[in-house]
Image (cartoon, rainbow, N blue to C red; front, side, top):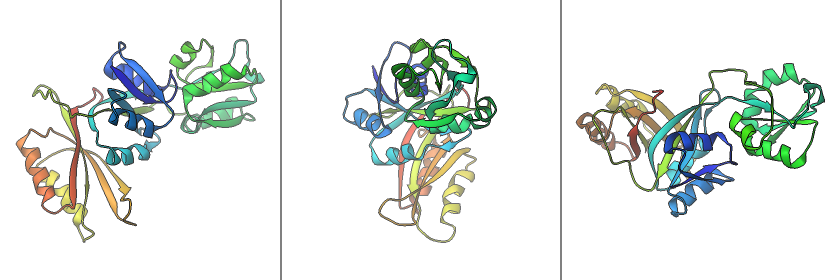
Length: 277
C-alpha cells in the first residue's frame, strides 16, 4: 500500500501512517495537504493520512475544507503523542545555538521552554518539523538547532541535545485515514465514530434543532466545528463527530431527522474509534 502524507520522511504524519497502517506500508511524502487529498483521489496513492486536530492548538482548518472539497471517506483515526526534541549537528552545545528551525506550530508549542533555554535564539518557521532536521543536515550549520521528533533525529542520524522541549506534555494530535471507498467491515464488537458535514438554514434555533436530533436519542457528540461556506458570505458548514455507526437504527433515525430541515447532509465516514477515545 502507498500512503500519502504531508511533510518529509520522519514527520509526525508519517509516524501516524505507520501506527495506523503498519510498518510494511510505503509512505509517500507531499509538500501540502491538498496534494495528499489529490493523490488519493487520483489513485496515485491507495490511502492518505492527515491531522485534523491537536489537543493544544485546536483544529487543522484546511483539512476540514479539503474533506468537503474532495470525494474521499474517513476510514479510521489515530491519536499520536507529540513529543518535540531539540536536535543539532554533532558536538554542538546549547550556548552555540543562535537560531531554531521548525514548523510554526512546533515553535509555538515550545515557546516557553525555548525562552528559558535559548532566550536570544531566532525562531525560523519551516513547512515541516522533519524537514527542518533535513535543512539542518544539508546546511551543516553548527549555530542552528531543529525541533522535531525522535524518529526524525534517528532518520537523519543527528543527536538530540535536549529532550521533550514542549511546554505542555499533554500534547496529542488526532489524524484521520482517507480512502476512496468507505470503511466496510463493520463489527458489533467495536466502538464506532461517525463524521458528518451539514449546513442549516439561517433561521432562529436551526443549529439547536440540528444538535437536538442527536441529544434526543442519547447519541454522544464528540466534536463540532464550523467553517465558512464558500460562495455564501457569513454562512457556515458544520462538521460533527459522534459515537455510533450508520448501520444502527438510532443513528439512522437521527440522520434522517436532520435531513428533514438541513440544507444538505453528507456522511464523511463511519470508522472504529482510536484506542484513546
